Length: 229
Length: 295
Image (tube, rainbow over all chains, first blue to last red; front, top):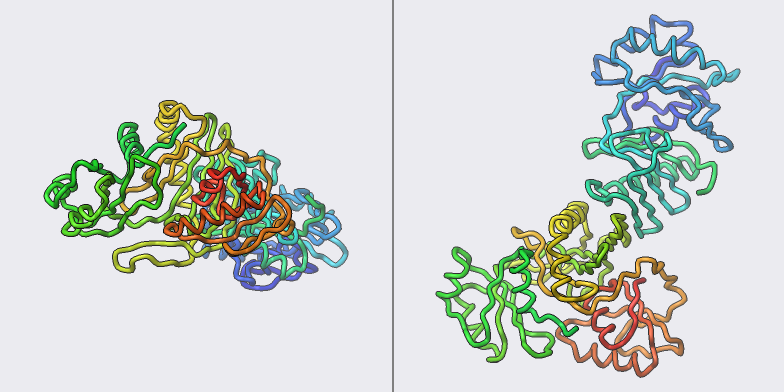
């Protein structure tokens, strides 16, 4: 099967946790980058359909770059995140041939581990956000902790030292780092609203990867907090 | 050291090129008429008038939004020993209490006008050796404003990102001048009261010489363990620390003095405030010998 990421509530057992949570975040009214999901079996068996859908999707969204990501029921689980273990490819050229090459050569060879007998594995072709800031936010009970870096969506998850760290307990903010150039209050308020919605919807403390672009907070990934800070 | 009067402060701001909102001082010996003010402020018609004294005095007269035609009458009605500071009238967007140290600063920002009776929790910025910390509440609070159309009024507001950025940029730009001013005054901590005036930006208004050394390591306090004083008539419990949660208008200095006298008599040693350790209330409490800490 093939599905848009943002206008339908995808289920984890069919599409994997990453795609399902992003699509549900979209259904909650949160901004997520547009994307097209192709299930593992479709990618293996129906490359013509995948090619046709990708071509149409590229025409509709005209991304400058595409991020190709794997979504599995075996990652982002409550008992184990497997964070960073599935394959993601950034800065992919937005044409069908290139994207299918990435899928076939970089993604599929490593994909079989991530499926299970019932499926639950898909590949997401997403509009790649050119972020002014990006980072990770944890909401644990009512304590929001944010770490961020400039012009990157993955520097924090990659282990770079955050340029700024913000902690919000109740209504009290505490930030540390280079403040100049950071819309701290807007960022904290936006993330507080978004993370609270996700926490309430999924019924779990959430670990959210996010990006800030042109005044909009984009949710890139939602997973359960599996260990306390 | 002894305090720096409003008049001395204005002159120092001019000398150190820190002035935002322009100011002209008319010494008590010279009472300007309409033509003098019009000459000193060409093309302006509405003014902020403040007064200064060469002796220790509080709650000196001031008036916002005085028309050029009324300036002369207002000034002539003043006690003869008062100096006058005339500035263009400009609505205040946010206010700052700044403590400038050798290796950083602590600043408290509130939306609108910050007066003694502004019961509002500031957003605190603390820069120390290039590390900048922000703390405080992001919740909207009832802030005080003044416009010509509405006079004094209150509305919910909070400090916004642009204000923080403008303030941080201002401190970077003025860093050397602020340090030079601190050196000139020979004090460890230079205290400044500033506000952001519409059309003029951040503008220092007063100098404080009794600001304590930064205690950023001081942690947030558990409010529940403190006795709360919610009214100026409340009695104090037996311990030596209280949370003072009262609002006293700047005109009611006698009430504040009476309250402080009772605090001292009750052997209260530490007063916790929501309004921040650089607020007017905090300054007055410290002057009475009480330690002031932030909630």
